[in-house]
Length: 230
Image (tube, rainbow, N blue to C red; front, top):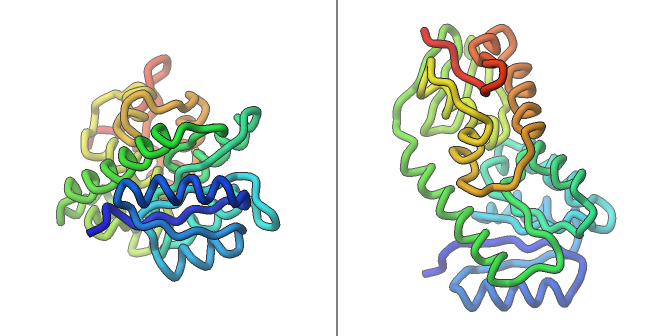
């Protein structure tokens, strides 16, 4: 029994073979492609547990792949770890804002990458176990934690994986104020490297998608955010 299926996307053959070897050695089931187009097709057909995605790809680059997959209801739940070269910090931030879950900088240690893979899959499974059959309702907002769906007045609201986890974290503890660091720890785990700006962008995007009900996510100046107590 494998630990999980992983799609590796990179156009450098030596990188692909290095990652494939180490994943197989640890009991994972990797499949590998070398382009963004192939990555999208494979993700949609195979639905892997996790994708290791290089940002610099021929044709459709990694950011566009991430954008397409996270905007597709069929694939938006798939965990994505980005591979980036030094000096691509802006692209990393963009990737995280698009819904990617983690990143590793090239050149990387296989042990570090494997640790990130293990951590991402552990968080995914823990999150799945924690999500009950409960349906949370706030006015016309309905959050189905089992189906991973959000609707307003019966209309589906298309949230990224990160936006959904952010909303669920806040709404499950109404009235409590959380710092950006606490929000990051809850969504991504401790010691996750992300900027305050990234969290702020996620909140702005979430409020926009919630429309009138975005008012429930309140900014507490100098501290962080909370979901308005009913």
